Length: 332
Image 1: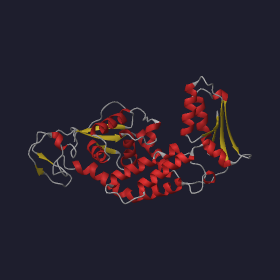
Image 2 (image 1 turned 90 degrees about the vertical axis):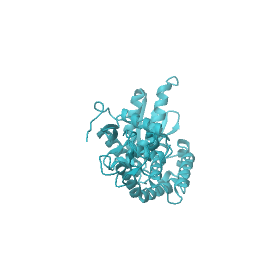
Image 3 (image 1 turned 135 degrees about the vertical axis):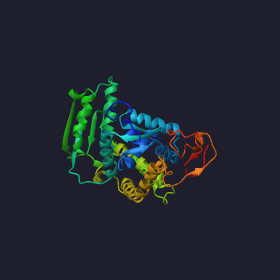
Image 4 (image 1 turned 30 degrees about the vertical axis):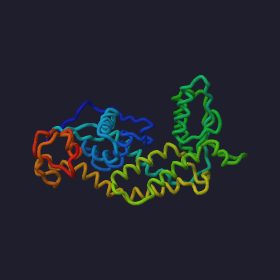
């Protein structure tokens, strides 16, 4: 087998917060697939397997290929060539980021004991410094902080104090900001304070949508549904401040959604991984001779290569051959 690496040493992986939060895009779905299926396996994916999986998700081939290239350019993947076929390999840094991200996603929604401590951030930012105001607002919101008043942010997670300090320094307002870890002693109603700082009804509406979408019958295509499940759940760490149970409304739907996610994820995981392995290995198990993954060869009249691209990696140029291993129907 001829193999090689393309390009120089990869840059450190980068990803926008939009994609990290499960953006509804080809690249966002690709990150979900990498973390859910590629990372726990051998860390590699053939182009053909990604194309086949994304076809099931309704993603066009062009968008899938662009997502692969952009993810590679961002330092997440390296390409390896086997003849004219391309295999994508997770970089070491991408493995670490995906492992950390998986822990955050799979553990999100679990309630933990709370010591009644709050992080309080006070920042004075001039109205004219729109960039600093935007950076502080978006990044503290991303970290789960709520705005209690102009320039005053709170979070019931004291371990996030260091993150708040970093945000303020990087926004250039550290000299006029203060970060405290303290207990609330009164006087107003705590539920009213929470309602001021966070829009919990909006978050709960998202949980209700999740419950409605994944609470039905077993899926016909477990691979596609598993990717959709994890991709949908990826959004919640970025929109839900993960408040302690004492601060949440009664019958909080986020708790039911977390249970449903855990249940469905465990139910579908083994079958989804088996199907991904089949796509990633069986399609080309016989590319070097001896059939195609035990499927055998089917004698077909010569057709343009595009007729078979759903089933065979389009980077393998066999258009001039009358022999081709296929699964299922021919497509145009």
